[in-house]
Amino acid sequence: MLSQDARSLRKKIKALIFFRALLITLLFGSSFLFEGSEYLVPPPALYYFLGSLYFLTLIYALLLEKVRALFLFAYGQLVLDVVAATVLVAVTGGIESWFSFTFVLIIIASSVILDKRAGFIIATLSSLSYGFLVNVNLYDAISVQSRSIAKDPVHLYKMFTHILFFYLTAYLSGYLSSRLEKTVQELEQTDLDLKNLELFNREVIESLPSGLFTVDMIGQIILFNEAAERIIGLPREAVIGKKLDEVMPYFTFPPMEGRREEIISADGTEKIIGITVSSLRSVSQVPKGFIAVFQDLTQIKRLEDEIKRKEKLAAIGELSSNIAHEIRNPLASLKGSIEMLREDAISATYKERLMEIALKEMERLNHIITDFLTYSRPALPTFQTFDVCELLDETVELLQNMDHQKGRIVVRKNYRGGLPIHADPQKMHQVFWNLGMNAIEAMPEGGALSISALRQDGLITITFEDSGTGIEAKDLEKVFYPFFTTKENGTGLGLAIAYRIIEEHRGRISVKSTSGAGTVFEIILPAP
Image (cartoon, rainbow, N blue to C red; front, side, top):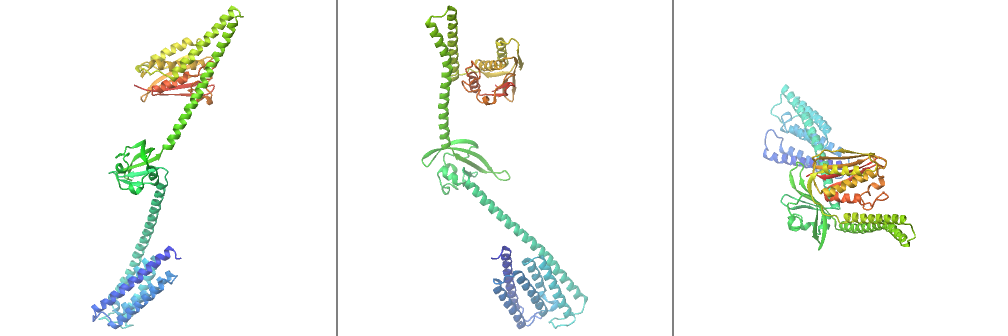
């Protein structure tokens, strides 16, 4: 099987044979129009000459499909063409012949069919043939039909200009041919790259697990991939070229850009899809329409709902277990105290002690129930605008009075007055109190508690930073869970309540801590 270069060369040789036959036909026809002219040879001689060229052309055509050495075959034809041109010029007037242009045609053909080097070789052969012909004409070595040939330097100049023109033709045609060949190769490569890129893009688009469609500026659907057919339940033949809101009425035009979820009806069932719409622009950023990418979230949503249901049941079970554990301990103490009091076999002093224990445990039970109700059924916040620094001052004063270490804990206030906030002061006081008490309890040997508040970028940030024992890394993600506590007498609801209150205020609370190096609680709330 021939290579691509060989096939290209064979195609060029076939074109050469065709144009040779065309030129011979034109010469043959023109001989009848100018028959009898003094510049033409007698018609019979011309007919024999043209007939022999026809015969050679026929042989070339028959051999073209059989010859393997196409390069030599082309060279052989071009050399024979030079010989034929020389004969034609010789018998039609020699140096005064009108047919010297045939050398130029052969030089151009050699550059186009073969290469620049072949053009120079044929130009050299043409120059030698033409120079030989001029010299034998000038010195009457052969007889030609001409009015007059004088041995004059003008004829030498004419020969020089012809030879110069031959080489210039070889150079220019070779240069243009090589540039054309290179351009053709680049265009073919570019065309191949574009086809491969188009195929790749089509394969990528069709292989996407997500549905994809594009619409133009008037709402007509241009592209609709296989996943879109599967999700929407419509064949692309039914939607391509149609208006978006006609075939898919749940999508309005122009579509709203951004990410959202939609409920659509496909194949008689409702589906939940997550769709992202963005504008479609050209390379020069000119709007061309919209592109939408979407996924079927129905099954995912069902799984999410099932997981949430299971998580809710698990949370209820864990919460019930924690409540039972927290209530069981004071109940056990109450039971033991009451049983001993019922025996009435103890001293009055010990009875009084048992009564104190019973009352303390009942108070503890009441505290647990109250905190749990506060967490599970929080009262709606009553928003008002107040100075958060004043509320922090009140909290600091209460914390200093509760400091059992009496001065061993230093409270630093890193804020100034005049920081308004729109919130529920009672609930925010509960949050600050819980954070402050946790900080004091985390510093049994004393330390420093730093409270900061500032406004920045439309947000109010409040931090409680202590130098206490810190929180272990494994416990950090659990500190806001209800009933999670590392304290001996803690209920584990203080931080959970604080977290819920901050959520009610559209804010967020976070904790950073290193075991043995202190803890930082940060509250971020929207500024009024």
